[in-house]
Length: 150
Image (cartoon, rainbow, N blue to C red):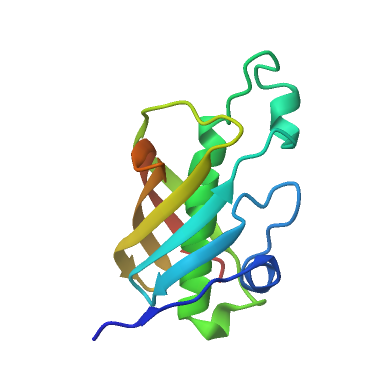
């Protein structure tokens, strides 16, 4: 059964699903969710981001770890949206990051499309794959695990 939802979670809906807030919220919206399977998040990279002040000011580059964080926040939205009982009660914590590659630099003006997929889940532990694209080019990918606070 395909549980795809043609939804567009905006800022207010995202903050009802996950505890992250400015300046550490790194997704602007979620375009699609297939419950318990996958999600697509969007990050509009702007020169006004706080991290650009000190991360190569002459040639601003989004730190790779923040791209992984954006993938993880998209995954947290997926888990929280799929499990209504988690909303506003529990947080999804990143527990490991593996096989991560940064293929191209992410700079102001890029729009990151963040694809995450559940690889496995057991009780309160999840494994995900995530890929960040900009204009159909792979910018980064990672495999990561997360745990729901109990």
